[in-house]
Image (tube, rainbow, N blue to C red; front, side):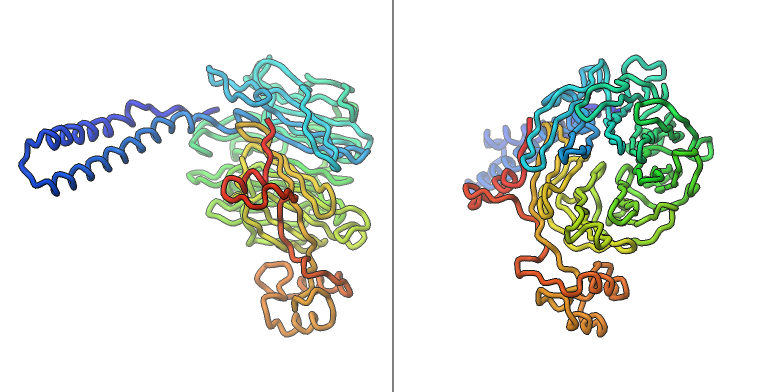
Length: 523
């Protein structure tokens, strides 16, 4: 559903009347119909010129308003994943209304196809190929890979559906050759689905139905959410309802998979409010049972602005989101659905934004010490860096930066300190590369090592520097970072910062040049 286009004639009527009055005033002034001194004449002339100029600028802005409002960014591109391959490369899979995108058709329908590109982390370059193409839209594309190397791509599909939309899928090998190729049906009438892998099974979490009224721009909301399980060759296993019935309105279901279970995360409509509730459940795809039945995770949620990931190195699900009134949150949830860590004072994440995650074995943020580093795009245009343990979330950096579009973002670490993001936009894929310098959590006195002096700073809680996780409290969680990093030595260049990759020809530029320096627009 799309927002209606505002009436330009109604917007112009008051401005037209004002312009007529100012025009008549200008004629009277120029004809000297009213006696006045030269200085007073010049003063009136300057005032009238300023008012007419201001109204012209306003008129131009209003002329642009209808087309701007009508252009939902998702009508250009929507849905993106960077899927890890066994050889260390990735498959970038996304939906787009052409390449470059063209936006909605003249009748308002969306013409998205699904595209793919191989990504070599050593030298990321996007070379798009068409994976799925039919009339109407196949979006948003959501993709996942099983332990045995099969990739599922699922999307809501406007082509040849009896109930306006259908949730469909295809399964492919790592070269994107069809195993059980598109179009395979999840549910005619299904929409907004996402997929995750749990070992050698796919879990598709999707919506069904639509209820008019309320929600974003009063466009309504989804109605029910369901889950379906498939073998890695695409064969159907089972389905079950998750939240169904007239008592609640549930939609935008997303999912992450651990080695055993899937975490289901979705938003629930709240009557007479412009925010939603965030609900979660833990599902066992092997037998179709709930490990944890639905539970409330957060209230006063900004619609659509949340994400869930499985962090393998700490064996935890990470759920993040944004509050309607500003700010954000993150929860660590174990495989049984128990909340084991939280941070309720984070920056806002960007809508439909996924993170880059680093936990390479043997690294300073890897399985050997049960930690991970996660970089999320922020709604205000920058990124935040989270350092995770099995029971704590530390905000180690919050860096301002360029704005993100809201139709989908995903990222990867190309090395321990290098991050690569791809962001969907109305003009095409935006690629961004950042360098993240290492963080030495537990260095409370700032002398670039973690030793007994830092323990004394923590013990006496003399400074905010002892707040390693950035939650505003100096406690045992901060001591855990000191313990895990005791004996480590950093350098004075080791403070967390995000900087662009070096390029000597751009170092002297500012303003718009800085934007070009940080990001490369792929068309």
